[in-house]
Each structure stands twice: as C-alpha cells, then as structure tokens.
Image (cartoon, rainbow over all chains, first blue to last red; front, side, top):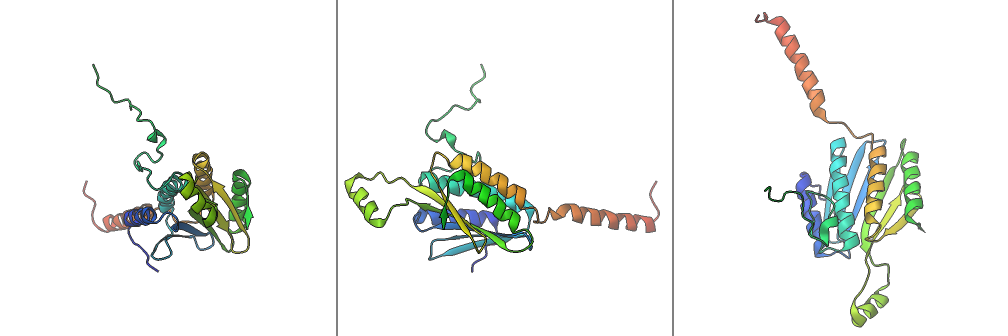
Length: 103
Length: 120
C-alpha cells in the first residue's frame, strides 16, 4: 500500500485520480478511536493512495478534503475547485466580491 | 446494506461512532454513482444524456453497514452535518506537539539558567 507522507501531494494526486476516472474512484476513511488513528484511502481499483495520521490538526485538513470530494462527486468532475474559499456556491454566477474601485 | 435517508443516516453514523469508542473502527466510503444499471445508463446515453450523478456514502463498523445517497442540492447541508459529527467524535487524535515541545524546551532552559549565574 502506498502511504503518502505529504498531505498536499495526497490531495493533489487523489483529485487527479478522481478526475481521470470519476466512476470507479472512491474515497475511504477509517477511524479507530481506541488507537487514535485515522487512515484515508483513494483508489480507482488500479492505483491506490493512502494517508495515515494520528494528529488532530490533520482531521481539520481532512474535513476540507471531504468537502472537495463531496463537491466533485455530487456535481461532477468538471467542477472548478476554488479551494481557497472551499465552497463554490458562486459557480454559476460570477458574483462581484466587495473589492471594487474606491472612488 | 441499509439505504437510508440523509438525516437517519447521520443519526445512525453518530451512534456508530459512539459505540466504537472502546474498540473497533468506523469506515466511511464516498463514491460517485448514478444509481442506475449499465443498461439504463446506455439507454439514456443514446437517448440524450441527462444522467444525474449522486454521491454514495457508506458507513460501517465492521458488523453493520448503512448508506445514503446525496445529490448536488443536499450535498452542502450533508457536508456541514458530517463535518460536525466528525469533529465531535475524533477526539482521540493527538493535539499539536509543538506545545509539548515548547514546554519541555522551556523546562530545559529553566534548568539551564538555574545552574548558570543569572544576568541581571
């Protein structure tokens, strides 16, 4: 099993994997409270990426990744991920964010 | 495999986490699915594609499996509730080690300065 050490690499590769084959890619999360361990796996049945951790701060990062996957899966792999904002409710309409010209 | 509606699924997931605190794991799987068989999908494709994809979410504790399917309209609401459940239950993960390291380094410093004469 391929355990990835860098979180960002794991995220990038799993999104790539999903975009390449959205129908067979799945994201699995296993949590063991007694051991205090969290393992994430993304696979398309050909390639497998895993990430394990026991850090609470990583759980927060995982939540963001969950959001990414939910959006990708529910809406479709062509969705543009505005990872900075996290949620792209502004997908359909380009809203003007309040940084217009000050006159 | 029990297919539930969104809210009962979340309730079941919560109780699953609560039950597995002493022993056992909780697995949650996310997969994109149209919930239609290949035949139906091919038919729809030839007719004029309008296949609606949903996110299939499965949860198991090794013994019992529950599942639900989330569409694009409900996914944000589900996402928020799901995040809350996870945050509430993933309490056994270690906190940031920096603080511990800081404390230990401070303790070392104090020991160090007590031996040496303090600069006034």
